[in-house]
Amino acid sequence: MGASVMNAGTSAGSFNRVFMLQFDNGKELLARIPCPVAGNLSLSTASEAATMEYVRLLYLSGSDHNLSTFPKIPKVLAWDSSFGKPAAWPYIICEHLPGVTLDTKWFSIGQNAIKEVIRDIVSFETAILQESFSQHGSIFFADNVSEELRKRPLYAEPPTDPLRIDLAGRFRIGPTINREWWRGPYGEITADRGPLPDLPTMLASAAKFQLRCLDSGIDHTSPFSASTATDIPLLRRMLNICIDIAPLMVPGGESMSSVRRPVLNHPDLSMCIFIVPSEGEPKVQGIMHH
Figure 1 (spheres, rainbow, N blue to C red):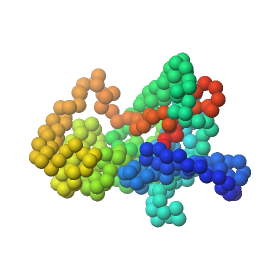
Figure 2 (figure 1 turned 45 degrees about the vertical axis):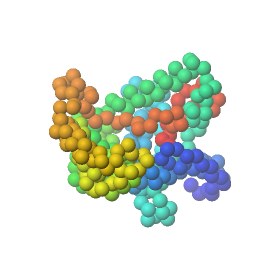
Figure 3 (figure 1 turned 90 degrees about the vertical axis):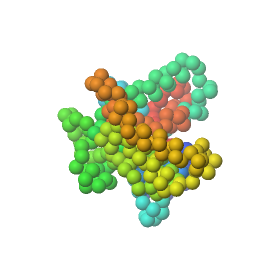
C-alpha cells in the first residue's frame, strides 16, 4: 500500500483475533488471526478466505437473486494458511467495512427496526441457501485442493451463466473445516473428513469418525464431556447402529431433494458479525465473520 501503520486496535471473536490497522494514508484494513481452538488452522484459514471471496464475487453486483442491497462482503487482500512465512501464523487481511456491529445497537433500537434487521438477515441466509453444490464439505480455492479434488465439479449441475462458470473454475469443495472434526486431540485422528457425496455418507462418516476417536483412547474425563470410560461399550453400539441406519435417516423422494442437497450456510449468525451504520436505522450493510 506504500503506507505505514499508525494505529492497531483489536477485538476478539469466538475463534479469531481481529486487528484493525489504520495507515497514515487514511486506509483501514482488518487482519484476522485464528485462535488455536478454531481447529485445523491451516485448513480453516484457506477455506474462510476462499468462502469470503466466493460469496463476495457471487453477489458483487448486489443484484443476484433479485437482491438490490445484498450485504457487502469484505474483499480478501492477502492470506496465508502456513506457519512458515514471516508471520509464523495463518492470517487473513481484508477490507475494513465502515459501521458498527449489530450487537452494539441491538438494545437501543425499536421493534420496527428489529423486524427490518431480522428481515435483512433472513434475506441473506435465504440467498446463500439457493446454491446447490456437488458435495458436502467446505469451499476452497481450486489451487488449494488436491489434483483429484480439482477434477470434481463445484456445483451439482453444470452452470450456464458466465458468473457461475467463472466461479466453477476458481473454487472447489474440499474437506470440512467444522471444528467438531478437528477440536483438540480429534485433529490427530485419521479419518475421511470429506468432501462427501451425499447426506447418508456424511452421517455414516461422522459415526465412523467417532469410533476411530474411541479406538484412539481419547480421554473421556474432560469436564466438557458428558461421557465416561464406562460409557464406551454403549457408545460403540450406538455408533454402529447409526452407521447401519444412515441411509434410512435421510428422507427420500423428489419432494425432499432440497433437504438432502449440499448448500452454503453461515456457521455463526451472531449479532457481532453484522455491520450496520453507526448512525440512523440499523440496516445490515455488511457481514464480517469473527
